[in-house]
Image (cartoon, rainbow, N blue to C red):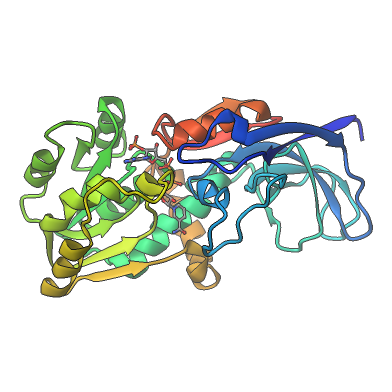
Length: 341
Ligand SMILES: NC(=O)c1ccc[n+]([C@@H]2O[C@H](COP(=O)([O-])OP(=O)(O)OC[C@H]3O[C@@H](n4cnc5c(N)ncnc54)[C@H](OP(=O)(O)O)[C@@H]3O)[C@@H](O)[C@H]2O)c1
């Protein structure tokens, strides 16, 4: 083993609203030594995901919050650099829950081995990993688009949203994406081949969304919440389905909201249109549906029916700045940190 020191980024302070660089601290530690049954991993690519913002708050959720001083949680593509585990050899490339650091120990039998000959290994963090599976499971199992129906999704250039629209098209539905800025909208229409893309920063956003959905909305895949949900709500058709996957517009909220309480109107629409609104965390479907997801989406990437985009930032020390930017929409595609390629 040649590495002298390891680096890691810990939660230094709980953010008040938008995270600041001072909420993170870069530390140097010794490279850990694997015991019997363990492997030592060197992180190559670290995934940055919106859910990480929730872990920084001391608030009850589906996952335990981080304590101050804990290494930031996260999934990585890593190389096995020493193995005392019978199932792994030096040089294996795996997906692992390492957190934001350069080196980690693992004794988990459920590391997922990646085959670089099948697809670029970074896809395991995006289109062929957790965000991609979220799109697949939420759309197929909850949204259930039928041919000719209209499917709307926001954060449409990101790893979850981009696959939602492409799978909707493959199911014969119309796909309308919502994204921040003209460049992302052009990508969603031209590269991802959605039927329309609307910029949520446009002052006429609500009117343009209405025009792009002349037959209303049958499936709204909720990634964002806030002002976008308010524009979508009156366009939902009777019996529309709303897989509620994420609410990124409110992750930096400090409890005051945006001054407009839409809950009464939301409940009225749910009742009067017999809407199905279903929240979900992707892993509730994983045991039964992950193999079909990898097979179908993997084949779609291989033959060009499914496209994806990655936004790769160099250096672990740039992870906090990149993460803060993602919560403002500065990433364009699946956000990944190249720690040591
Ligand atoms: N339920 C689950 O199991 C699960 C799993 C994975 C992800 N998710 C959720 O899926 C959503 C998308 O995540 P992702 O992994 O695919 O990453 P992502 O699309 O890269 O998420 C970041 C994007 O969200 C958009 N955004 C951020 N703040 C916004 C705001 N105030 N208003 C509108 N858009 C905003 C920005 O895109 P624009 O610039 O285009 O607005 C930004 O680039 C998130 O809500 C995430 O929490 C849920």
